[in-house]
Length: 376
Image 1 (cartoon, rainbow, N blue to C red):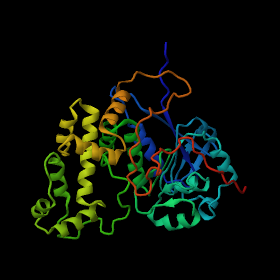
Image 2: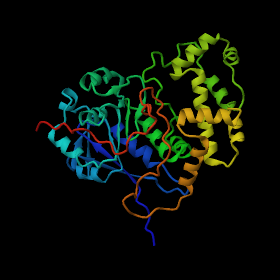
Image 3: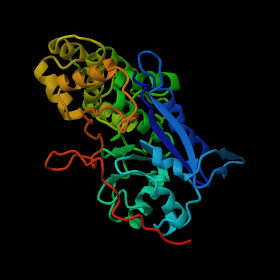
Image 4: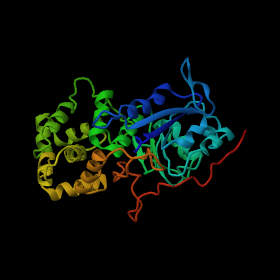
């Protein structure tokens, strides 16, 4: 008789000086992900460089039950931000204690950083030659300290397969939702977002820092227009009509839309239509022509073109992958227990995290050239 599969284990590394909000993001997002029967999809545990109390940047400490040896059991490791990284932040090198902790991580483990947690991954060499981001206020310093990293300061997160990084604070929520979506599909991720009361999807390529995030007083925004667009995704949407409904010129509408969303209206509409198509592919057996029509692409050929461009796979392959994942029986314990079913990885929404020129996916077993240990 087969025993129940071990859940995909997410281990969060709590460092001294951590930000409690960011520490809680993985627990909140991954902990709310459930399969159709209501069973959890992830196990989330926390470790520190030594078991015991860990000081935060607030007026309290947290009690961590596990030491760094827990990292050896992880399928995904998350490193949230800390304000007390010491030589990691100042010199780009790991302390001996931190290097020893990271040495527990198995090859092939997925690595995730939130905000300045990316400094830890970079100092360990995990980001060499890779796209990465961090909080916009630290991006210039991050690039100077780690010139081998391809830093993109303008995006919410980057996805390079087995290594993912996010910008500051709330973008950690976006990245964790992206990972849930990548692992288990849009339906599961959207359910987590609803329970967390956050938007279900902000593209990684969306700008971190919008110069005027709140419309000026007495100036109309584009919120109502976006709501109408979502209600009419299945219809042709013309920029001239959208601008006319807002009683502004096309140029003004486009500028305001980009200021508020970080994307042009056309880019935003395409992303929303692809998201609608993902849900239809996961939830229904509709023919591709019907999916294309209901998502607003018109024809199956247009659907294939846009889904392939955004997700990197055909609609048929996407449906097959997530339908198989949804219907599969529990797997037995063993070397692969807890691993997420291999699925087509959506193309990174960032400008810098594109697949290699030859079209191959990044190797899941890529490990740093050196853990740059260092000091006491």
